[in-house]
Length: 334
Image (cartoon, rainbow, N blue to C red; front, side, top):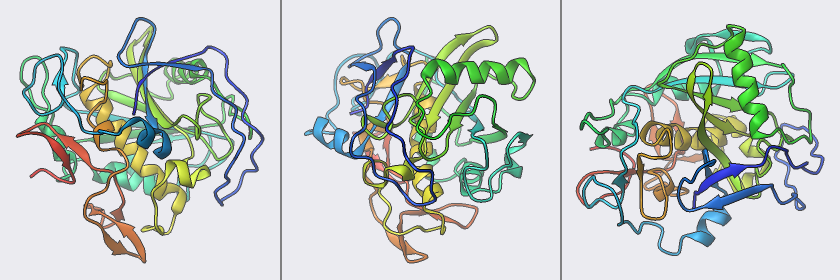
């Protein structure tokens, strides 16, 4: 189960991992300095996507709904907080070199259209799709519906204080990086944008990667405003814990694994950016309720996939919870 996360100011070291294009399993990951609670409490500011094992262990009844707030009897409820009606994404590739095949070179900025990686192609194509249209069933306090759109506005690839192999950057480190980008004009602040930080293999982003979670999203107060962000560590480092791939539909296993968690965090940022909008009685956000489930699949490039987007690529992306009828996990709307 995904839960609210308060991350300690100091990180926890991860056992050294050799940086490689091949996945590296680590059997002795140090327990992260994190504390969890069902709902947002003062000081908590982030919400994690658990590993497959942690999700299964915590969800004997994964789709139980009920409890609190408005929004109908769909198994998920509105709690009054803001919703992002026209969401945008800025990616931050934080490493000493290019992380994903075809991705931006280090110390460059550009538009989303200039990101040649599978990550970039996915982010340019998911908006307007039948899959993203599931989010159109969510609304804000004025009953305005989320638009079936997602704009990938730009990237920043940087080695500024880049984390070394085996390091564990803290949540405070990530926030500091984003603020540095704002202060130096490398990224621009926008209240409807999520700033997604990617790191290379061997980096324990946030201190609990691979043992507790595969990614997380949250928000923090900055001099420029309320900043929404996501930690997107290198999922293919832990293919059993943080990937469901059976083959690689785009011939790039690392990126194909990553887009699943990118979808998860981006749709949850849209419907629960400040952790006080859409979630169920157990604190599960929309993507939590369907995590690690994929529905009907097919074969693409010899690999398992479940959707093809406007870029012509096929992907294996978890289902999302639809907020209509009696609710449920869906691959598309309608």
